[in-house]
Each structure stands twice: as C-alpha cells, then as structure tokens.
Image (cartoon, rainbow, N blue to C red; front, side, top):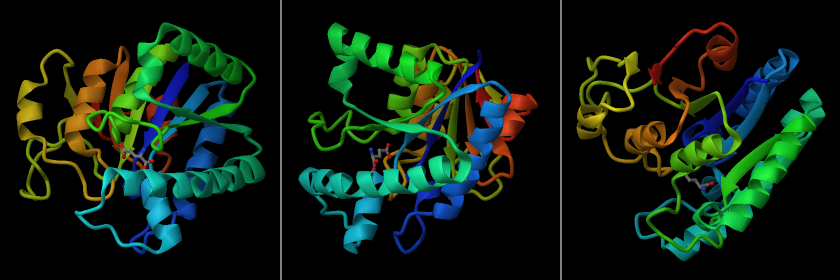
Length: 253
Ligand code: GLU
C-alpha cells in the first residue's frame, strides 16, 4: 500500500493572533480522509506545539525566549494541538489518531528505533493515523531540536514511505528568496544529489517555526523517497500530489 508522510509547518497551523487554525486542520482532515478512501496509508508530522503554547498562555514570541521556555510552551501547546486534531480527524472524519513524540535519541538507539518502527507499522496496519512531533520537553540537543522537516525525513525512512510531502505557506522552493525578490522563479523539480545552489539560495528559518527552506532541503537529502514542497493552502493539495500525480510546488527526487 502506498504510504505518505505529510509534514505540516507551524505557519499553517497557527493564526496571526497565535491561536490554532482549526479551519486548516479541518481541511487537512478532509484531505487525509480522501487518501484513506483511496487505500493510501498516511502519517502526519506536526509542528505548532510551541506556537500553540504561546497562544494558550497569551505570550508574545520574543528573540530572548530560552530553550527551556520553548520546551515549557511545547508541553502546554502539544495537548492543545492534539485536541484540535482529535476534533477534526476523529470526531469530524472518523479517523482514529495516535500521538507519537520522538527525540533524535530514538533514532540513534537500535532498541528504541526498533520499538518505534514496530509501533508505527502496527498503527498503520490498523488504519490509525500516527501524528508525530518531536518530544520537545526532553530533547536536549539544541542543534537537532526544532527541526521537524528533518524529523519527517527520518520517519519516512523508518516506515519506508513512498512520498514525503512538506506542507508550508509558500508555493515551493524558489531560485531566490521570494521575500527578497518577488520575481523569484519557482523551482519545479530538483535532483537530491545536486542541491548545492539551492542551499546557497535558501533563506533563514521563519520566525514562528524553525523550518524555512534550508531544513526542507536537508529533509529532501535525508529522505529515501521523493519529497514534495507545497503550499498547504492550495485546494486539494494532497489529492493533487498523491491521487492525480500533479506537482503544485516543487518535487525533489
Ligand atoms: N516541535 C516544534 C513544535 O511543535 C516545531 C519544530 C519545527 O518547527 O520544526 O512547535
């Protein structure tokens, strides 16, 4: 069965005022339901816990926010986030969900890796939708912390996914930073083994999440499957990619 990993960035999941964007979560739930109806298996890697924590506690993001503060915010936000997923996916679309929180350590230790692999495979075989995030509270390595694009690539490899879809709030990968040059051209496809010039052109991470194009390129390099970068707000974006074989953004093979 075709297996798809969908990573959803913080900017898609949160609104300007810091609250969680339930309209977007409901849209994705309907889209995933369509994939299930077409006999596809799916797994979501979600960001948004830290931002949801800020929204819940009505705290504004500042540059002086420490790692510990972000970890505490993630603890508040993660449960809030899962409640919204439960409402949209389970109550709204009849899809059972499971929360999986992973740390980089889980991929380095053979035993935890095996356990994670077995649990995920079992959930997928039971038609449960695993929703993965980094276990932000216990993650200790600041370099690896907060990079769900990379986490999504590792999870894709672990479950042998056929495609990794990185949903973001821009159309895809551009030849130059589109925030700096509005005429920058969209890259429709790129070769995994030849990403040097795209790395050079990639801007820094976005303010809310820790993604940005750099970690998306890293994810494409790590993943053993084709990787799509696409705008999550595009109508039927998942069906377009998975069911119709279209490429609304960028594909990296
Ligand atoms: N794990 C973080 C969160 O849920 C997000 C990491 C990222 O944006 O890459 O807030």
